[in-house]
Amino acid sequence: MNAESALQDLRETTLAAVAGLLARLSYLGSLRRQEGGYRHWGLSLVHGDESSERALKSGSHRGVI
Image 1: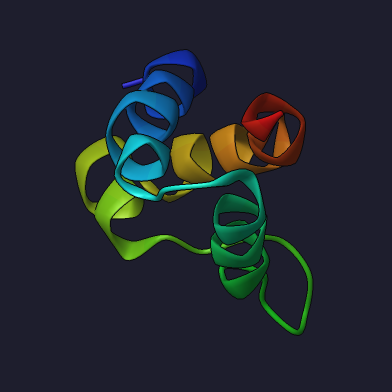
Image 2: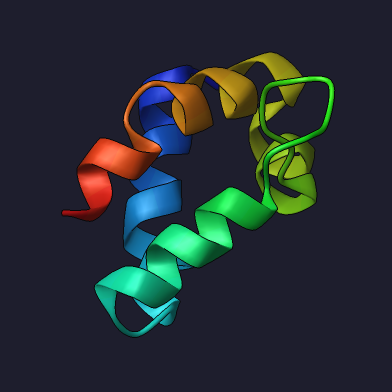
């Protein structure tokens, strides 16, 4: 799987289930790790760690708006 399909999955499935802009931003913020980067176990399980990380970094916050 690639980062584009992971990003599409993030937007169409995960974020679509969270109502409201602030709630989505809060949710995405909760996926940030202390050491940097993001971690979403479901995306990683389906798309792999690397694609999941790239999708979350490459537009998750920008894509919410």
